[in-house]
Figure 1 (cartoon, rainbow, N blue to C red):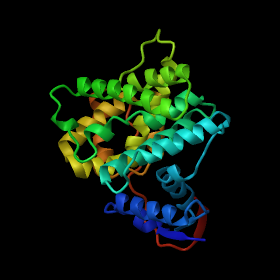
Figure 2: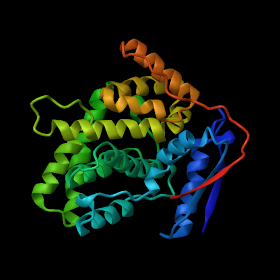
Figure 3: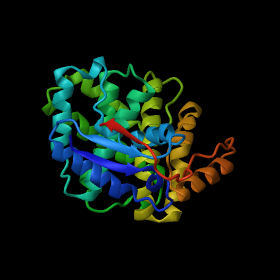
Figure 4: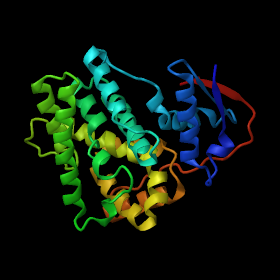
Length: 289
C-alpha cells in the first residue's frame, strides 16, 4: 500500500511545514488513483492518540466521509463537477479546492445528519474565488472587509446556481443552496428559516480556516492581516464550535493571534495546543486514509 511516514517529533516542531506535508499527502492520494493509501504516524505512546487526532483532522479531506443524504448519484455528479472546475496546477486554486473538501468534512463532523443542500453549499461556498482570486489574493486590499466578503458570497451564489443546473440539480434545491452560499459570510438572523444551517456552514468554514488554511494564510498575507483574519473568523464561531480549537495543531503565531482575539472580544481564554513534547519516536501506528 502506498504510504507516508510522519514522525510526531517533526509534527510537534514549531518549524513544521504544514503545506509541504499537504503537498506530500495530495501527491500520495493522487498517485493512489482512488485505491487505499496509508499515513503512518510514529511517536511516543502517550502522545500518539492526540497527535493522530490532529493529523487526521488536517487530512480529513481524503477520508471520503458521507452520510445518507450524500450517497445519492446527484451528489457524485456534483463532486465530479466541482473537481472539474479547479485547475489544481495553480497553488491558490489547489488551496481553495482543499478548503472546500475540508469544509464539507467539518460539516459532517459537526452535523452527521447534514442534508444535501448544506453539504453542497459547503463545497461551493467559496467558488467565486475561481474568478477573482485564482492567481492572486485581493481580500487584504478591500476598503471594507465585510462588504468585500458579502459581495464575494453574493456572486458565489449566482455562480453556484448556474453550475449546479449543469450538474442536473433541481431548481428548488439550487435556490436553497444559493441562498446558503449568499449568506455564509454573515451571522444568521434569529428569525431566518435557515439560521441553523447557516450557523453550521459558518462553523465549518471557520474551523477549516484554522485547521487547514491558517499556516498558508500567515505566510501569504503576513502577521497583521492574519491577526485581522483570525479575529474575524473567531467571531463567526459559536461557543460549541470554538471548543474544537483546543484540539487543533496550530502554528504558534496563529495560537497567539487566537488568544489576543479572545482577549479583545472578552471570550474566556482556552489556549489551543500549538506543539507537543516532541518525544523521541518509539512506536508506529498505521492509519489508513
